[in-house]
Length: 449
Image (cartoon, rainbow, N blue to C red):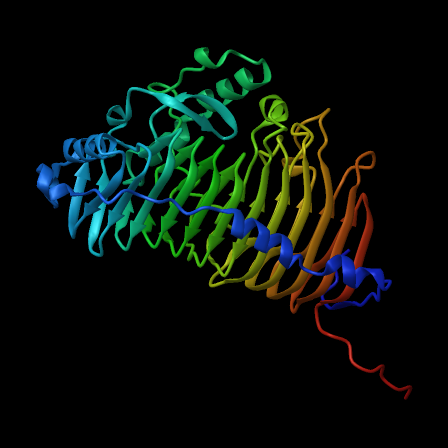
């Protein structure tokens, strides 16, 4: 139904207040459990290794030497001073290293795909495979960081951008391998398949810090937190507007703090994932869990997304005190489909300020209407203290399946001031609303004339 002005005001039972209370103690426990990386005292300035910040000279050898020296010294800090450093190839981390970009420093990666060979073990849209190396790649590392006020430029707007129109064959091949449980060693992509690499990927890593840097112009996802834990991302600034430029993608990630981040992305600001389809369901013992998102500024396609690749499960996500500084297509978006299986549960969102969106709060188990046989379980979703100035389409959408209903959705103190479609709620049970206003607030009833 189409309601231009609708007031929904449901007074719930007394138990609702207790259920809807934001679980601050759980958030504190997660944050206190996360360990920041520590580093030995060794430091190396890349200028000492022959690097030139002239935007022309290839400085990859200097960065490789710096990592090798850190490894020899059991870790340390690589200092990148002011200048523009061209890298014709990736940076591969070793443990116990802080890559520190000083103010005015920029690392500018080449956009020649051959520079990112040989292939490495990675993931692409929820499927494990071998592909081009991410531009910055850490595999099985502990105590690693990228810090400082400098910039990382992925040069993603030309050659890499052209891959988007050519990726269908490779994408479909990867999904077939996922569904058919093809051995990992046989999942070789790279040249000829046009699957763009992530800008920064931490894979099977622990004790990670990304702080205060600027990220721009990524080829694909910007910061991919894959099968990693004990992660802090704070004070980061984005301006990355190419195809699929998600800001942060935790995937099978555990104990994550994302705070004080300013997003400006061509795709999702934060997209929490947990693998795709058969492979994802086989990894259900390592869901994405215990993720805290707070004090962030959203701008881009969607603010916070859970899914759609979430077959390993997503649980214990806490989002608070965030606002949109520009247009978003959707504010908070929970999405899965009948190919995925898995679960999304125990999600708490509060104190969110949205300006203009297409849809404000959107929960769907039927994303793109795709798939069959593996419907997801969505339950225990809590939204409170959310304001939105305008939704050009829908205020609140909840879409389950008749045989797999979305359960236990709590909405408290929600105000969407202007909207085309107020509420669409189908195949859900125990949806409880308290102080929910969609459209113009009603006042006292008018008197008879």
